[in-house]
Image 1: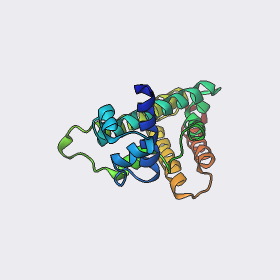
Image 2: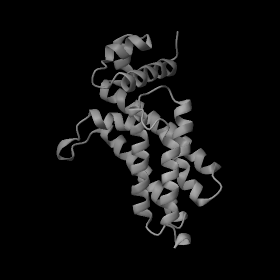
Image 3: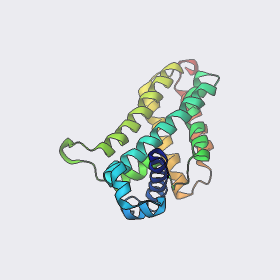
Length: 196
């Protein structure tokens, strides 16, 4: 008999694959349960419903992504390289993560309407948390790299990051991460106090 943790992981793995290969809206809990080899009642016992399941999938992805980014930053040998490490982290994360069409957070944001009237939405809160993490960390790293306007540099790199992730879905340009990294290097070079 499988342990509850093993069963939970199988359900999360199946949900992640289906949500981000087939689409969140079109994937039902019965399909996830069948793919995981469990009864629908078991899925509900572990997660309570599709929204909770999606939230747990995203939470797990955010934790894994953050670990990759932490490692890429730790392996960088200069403030500029630490700022550029986001693109290295995408490469290592994609190499290790299960197959998906593109960024799970962008995919979720594209399929779910923004909550009205600031209503609580735990799934959307994870999307906001991911955006805050990326933006705040890029701004801190831009400050450490002596960028003259860290918030603007962070916004520019977030735009490049989002564009590179979207290009992975579009398939063009074919290898967007090195292009995004090189473009980011130009931005950093033009907006650091050392370059003035």
